[in-house]
Image (cartoon, rainbow, N blue to C red):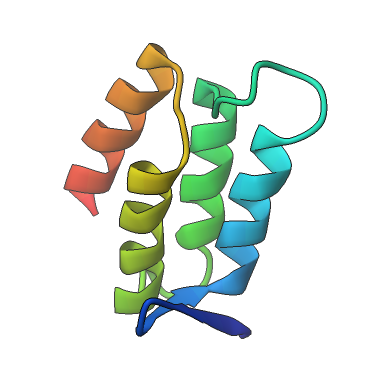
Length: 81
């Protein structure tokens, strides 16, 4: 598992790269509901969501733009983890 450190905090590189991929290229530059589900699925691989994965999800939520539907869905799903 590869990690990246941003402002002294450790995050999962794969999740960050996935968020970047979802917000660059074609589209409106926001994470859609399907893409939010993809991020959550990636974080939930293995034996549940680790502390680092949870921190990464929160960082992604604060840093990247989400559509309204994606934001609502993502927030609800993260609250269940």
